[in-house]
Length: 110
Image 1 (cartoon, rainbow, N blue to C red):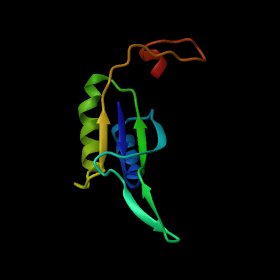
Image 2 (image 1 turned 120 degrees about the vertical axis):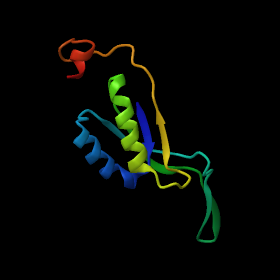
Image 3 (image 1 turned 135 degrees about the vertical axis):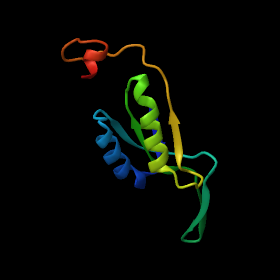
């Protein structure tokens, strides 16, 4: 699953996921826009449009039974009820390989 969230929500989310026992995360600084569509600014008399907003993408591979509690934590922690709170995407993983050992499946995640 991946969640695109506001940067200021990440530290609190990270702590709550750690408390839940989620250990493996990939975190990226990203930029994007949705309903916000951007805004206009003025710099030294010139107008310019800011089209992308900074976000944090948090990715994790979890088992199906773990999804509900993790989604609940993300929703509770990251919601401000303002446009731009983010999105959660859930998809399936067909296979995983640990490059170092060649392990596959669940063993590659442990």
